[in-house]
Length: 250
Image 1 (cartoon, helix red, strand yellow):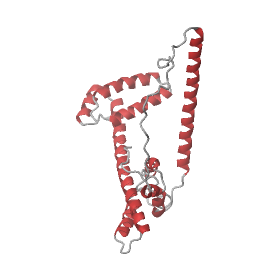
Image 2: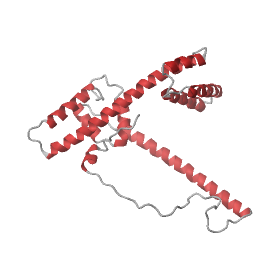
Image 3: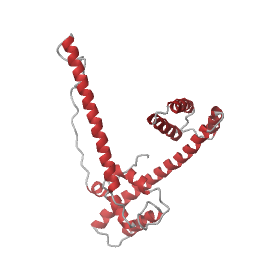
Image 4: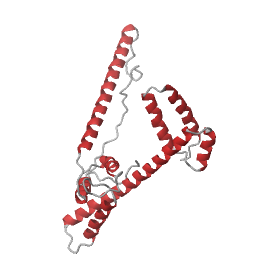
């Protein structure tokens, strides 16, 4: 999804405090990775012992990289599990508070989770539908035109305006992405079932249907075929990818 121009950031904390720090620019450059000793101040030793030491350092670094990759994977899985464990509220008012307490980097995930069933009402689990945005707009109007506005009301207004902007931009980007994905799926099927792929691609180019969404979907299919060890399918789709890339217009 396209990045939001404004995050909610736990909107509450973002709208009430902002701090910045400056770090002095380093005066010298240090080389952290230098297996061949090109930047060392003393001449590098040669011979069998040096080769063994070099191999040992490479193996050690490979183990460290593997451990780091495992750590990143575990952290990602923990983060996803934590996000999925959040209970979606039952009312629109509660859903507004739910989003106000959502960190900026999690907004896109929550939009993707709550937007697909936008046609449903808010019985059971609320969704990002017309009812939600109408309720949000109503509360904003009440705060903007309140006769005796308190500081708490001013703070609430700032929070809700930031939330409205983030969710409006986020849902628009999500809907656009989903529409592009649906079209890309249809176009990919059209290519797969075509008897003349080049003619089909040229026809699609004229309709501006050969784009990044199509290429991304094709890449996902190639990756899936790789995981399933479908060698012939991978070879076919990679050749097809080469043809598609030539016609990318967007």
